[in-house]
Image (tube, rainbow, N blue to C red; front, side, top):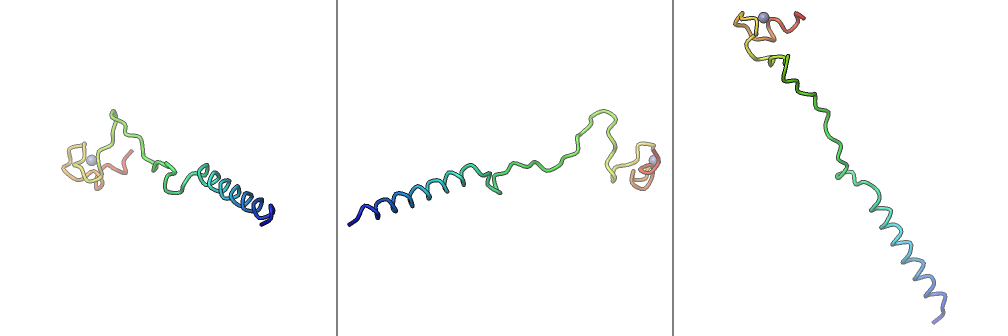
Length: 70
Ligand SMILES: [Zn+2]
């Protein structure tokens, strides 16, 4: 038995701990809370849905009527 082995063991253990700590500090790819880009919903002046009846009263779908008339 030599003290060298103990030292090595200790050193090795420390490396493992440091690695664990680093892993902890890194944001996990799964945990990264990146919210998907969501378009803000405007309650006033909201556009009708593309498949909704056109607000101009033509009876057509908005996407087939006034969606391009702005
Ligand atoms: Zn229209």
